Length: 271
Image (cartoon, rainbow, N blue to C red; front, side, top):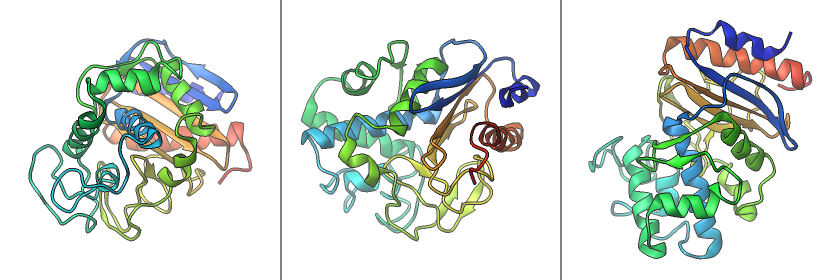
């Protein structure tokens, strides 16, 4: 019996899940159909921006977004911009204000240097190099990607052993603006609410959408369409998930249980 058999008990019509290591997919369940990624899109956008930084198109600490904010602030959700509007809720660097609008401002800023559209930039910088041919950015750089779990697994494999913006990835998965508190959507206020450069960090957060066996170094993102991707460097594993049911109590219970079962099966010494 595979840990992924748990997925068959979920209250969803469609679920596709893949266990990934640096060599590729270890185990998978569900159809390989294109589904909305929601905020898991932010991982693609973050890597796209990091590639732009690596190429010298932009720098992490140059001004971008509201006054006093930088590219780094926008990636780390510390620009102070509200979730979905151009309203300033805090001074940059003071609070972790999760912001779709901040990622849209970030994408707009990068395009002032690169030209074109952000969908074109993402395709050229990330999707095509990783072979993610079935995924496209169909809307906001904060939440508009659509694609199958096989492509999400390719992103997971890349994050386990980076080939794009290699030198920046260690920094991108470290805490930016340590000690900053804020609300982790769906899981309440966290103090601190640690975040990297576009990557949500597990660290010591509780409650959390990953499992109790996930290491503190685990990073990733989840989305409101019932999607997630976590990468656990200590275990050398990633878990990619797409569903057709919006995030809710079912996911807050089901995802940690699945994560622990996967780690127990594929890396018994994890945790």
